[in-house]
Amino acid sequence: MTPGALDQSNFGRYPALGRQFAINHVNLLRRLPLAVLPSILEQVITLDWKFPRERDQLEVLLMALQKLDPEAFQKLAAPFSKIDLPAKLTAFDWVNQPAQFVQLLTPLLWSSGQIDRYRDAATQLFAPMSTASTGPAEYSRVVLFVAAGALTAPRYPLFSKLRPHGLHFTNVEPEDDSSWALDLLTRRASGHQEPYLHWYLDGGEARSVQGSSITTLSYKGLDPVRRAVVAKMDRAIRDGVGPEVLYRQMAAMQPAECGAQTVTTDPVLQHFVVDLFTLGAGTQIYSTTFVQWTAREILRRAQPETMFVRVAPRVRGQDLNSLVKGTQAETELDPAGSMVDADLAAYYTWLELRKLPGSEGSVFLAWFPGRHEALLTGPSVPTNVRSESAMKIGQILALAPAPISSPRR
Image (cartoon, rainbow, N blue to C red; front, side, top):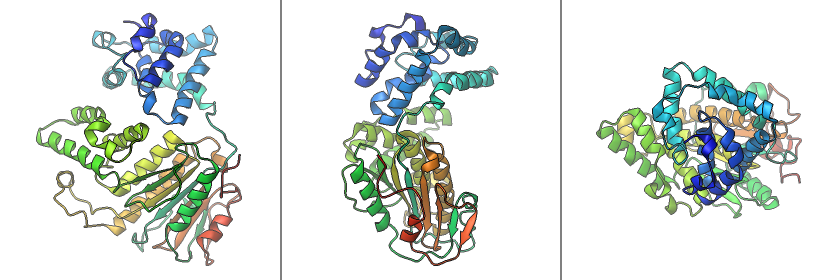
């Protein structure tokens, strides 16, 4: 079947939201070349499991394309029509299996030397979305990144990548490493209670938090899903499955296979946590990698107003087979290595925060109580400046000019 032959009946196997979305935009979908259409349908068929911001983004993209005059649209679509597709792809069930189509398309583009042409075409086609905002920019996002006090590495140059972008404090007075952050998270969540806008992510065991509008994820709390995925990896290794086949098997895992229903009753979160462990690199093994990957995915996909991230020590490094088989006790921790991981995770989290709409008004605070060091970035906060004055975390937060107690409405 060609894209031009699409009609409403072709989407009967899609979940409810995705089916209606496809029907609403079927006239536009018919006009897209086969080389790119499954990439969009891959987003549509999983729409029921996406966060509100992701749904908005997809709607913005298709509406932007729909508003183009015929000549402008044809100019954007034409490069994809020049992509040479073999018969096995043109005959593939790309409507009901768009993700599998994309998985087959990617190596073909590389082997045929068409990958650069495809990337250039995709950049141009999706450009309308990059210039359109999907959410309000009148509030200030706040991300609090805290390392557990046990993370220590005295000679490690903390914040070496972040220092040029913020105010570095080297004499922060010790206090509880999470109650202040949880209090701030709760206050902000009470002012704006839509789902998935306020998150608490913990690399160990989550602390008690008040407020039904706060989404909480923790490495310990998601252990049933993690163990199910690790068991799948172990079986694949023992069976001699290659990396490409393993990737496809992991990507195809569903919440029911991983016990996701035991950690949350929310279908959107069930799919999200499964993706964290099936698509993440190292999230199944190291809690610090889990935090780094998950913080990025929360910012990228949910685009929250508030996020509190806490990093706990991870297990000591070992060979992959031993990690997957679980032959090393999980109590054998690596505080020094965990600090290095946490420092990089803080930097990558800040980078992802900078990509979001309204990032110029965002506040980011990273604190490592084991080193008595913190770093603050935000509007009008000095950059590449160091302070050796004795400070408390509350005093540091007060230096952020944007109001962070609750979102601006």
